[in-house]
Length: 275
Ligand SMILES: [Zn+2]
Image (cartoon, rainbow, N blue to C red):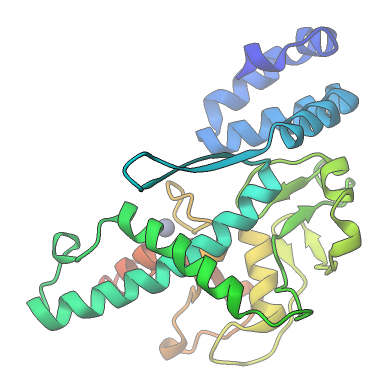
């Protein structure tokens, strides 16, 4: 990562910051380090970052061609924003298909159903999800409202902890990349009083929904387990102090948990909550 980040334009800054970056490499997990280097590169060479983003966008391609026995073969390369849009739509449908397969397997096998009982492999489900996406595109009325948000980008207020400009899935993007989408985007503002605390929305509700849910998603961005990178879009918002034990539905008592870690926690209620 560091060798790739060192270019003619960043060489001087790398000489100054190499020790700092190596200490980040030692202290952060891999996705966190990739983000740290991306932000460092943006600061060290803002124009270079935009050039690279433009090259990534220019390199986009998609081939779908029919093989000689009638099957179809595909191959694609997408820039980070376009890829996140496709990935989000495809995963939403793949998750629906997974739920359907799980119910079907449970009805067939009973309570002890496992991944091996599912009638489709993950690759088969993705293929079916792509076909379903094509079918649904034909159902959309002409001139219908486009789904929002297509993707979520987190843009920071520089005074907190340096620059921030990343997709909700953790990919760092350049400000120029985001600017290109602004005519088709809507913006929402979430106010933090420290980098890790969103100003309390403060209502007593059973479920984390609406602005409160968004505040926690934008604050945490991934599952609360340190070793888990599941992004906010695929997490549930969990009460740190359980609702049943009097825990409130507030920003301070909410956290993101992937399905696995949310369920794991409820199987072991004796385990004290983190934080
Ligand atoms: Zn998790």
